[in-house]
Image (cartoon, rainbow, N blue to C red; front, side):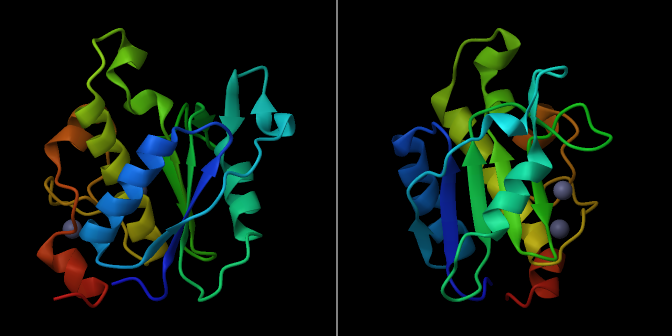
Amino acid sequence: MIKGSLLAVPIGDVSQDLMLWLKSALTDTLNCDVSLRDSISLPSEWYNSARGQYCGVDFLRALEHIPRKDYGPILGVADVNCYACGLNFVFGLADPYTGVALVALPRLRQSFYGLAEDEELFRQRALKEAVHELGHTLGLGHCTDTLCVMHFSNMLNDTDRKSANYCELCKRKIGVK
Ligand SMILES: [Zn+2]
Ligand SMILES: [Zn+2]
């Protein structure tokens, strides 16, 4: 499904337990080799103090410069709130032209909304967002199938409803049986 191996990169302070869990879940879900890199720093220039959020595109630009041995995609994981042009916030972002993707964790936690924390639900959301953004790096657009991981998540309800995998149609588009 993925040509080359996937490189997962924590940006700033991200739980090592979560990164190890994601590495193993992404290996199973995408059926590819996943390697985990040491974290890269989170420069203060990426922070927009007027918005109280980080600019997600800055993360993508930095990920592009990380050397990769076999041209596989790069997934950045950050535990800070991110926005993108025209959007109040993003769960994730991707650039299909450079093969880099980002998942922003804070809004995937129940506690962000004043609810009791649910670690398993949080991890599943992180996995789905990662597989979704990586789908964009493989050239997939949004899918109308509400169970497909490529369905657009406007709200976490959408994320929780969908599966962590591509539907048959999306699989065929990226050459997977
Ligand atoms: Zn998307
Ligand atoms: Zn689909």
